Length: 232
Image (tube, rainbow, N blue to C red; front, top):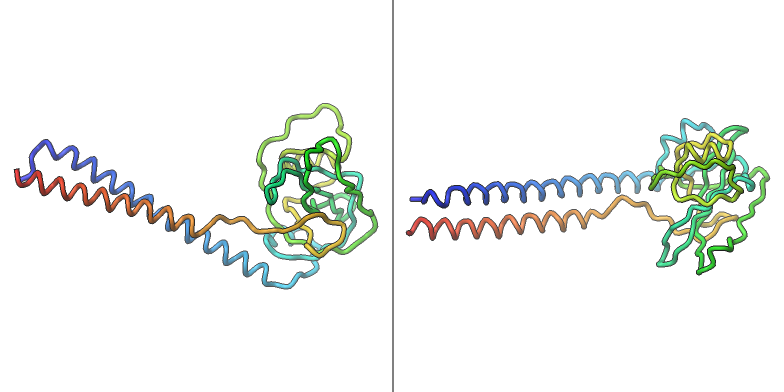
């Protein structure tokens, strides 16, 4: 017979075990989501690059490689600061690529390390002639909001965030909500080693195993206490 003194602890233990199991199954669901995303990215990247001229079509091509026709605007470049690549602090060079007179897409031309010289930028000039470039499209992630600026900045502008609305105002273009990563073999680029970020499936599986093991240990403790309580 179970003593009354064990009922409340038993309820608390049961709730805790249920919570641990719920966390474990949630992590399994997250792992499956990341597995599906990984599959979509692999499928997108396996397709050959095709020429895209319609802005609306670009919006549905995340993770795809595409070919764009237009020209760089060397006068409206952005320095995307506070980036870490291979342990080095530096910045990405983002250059508007004009698709027409009013619309542009930001092309990430690659990473440049500061090497402790934050007062000196690399030579980021690029020709404004019409060109065809190969890029991979991703949706930009905004880290922080840009502060309101009362004075027009001098280009290239140092930025801390991909606030496309603000960048559109600064550049004079309607910047489409996609970021183009310049192909690693293309000219006019810097260090490029693009890797899609979708999280780690193994990480979520490890967390799930952790929660399930904790639930198992707590269950064994509860069973042991129940047996001892029943013998008294």
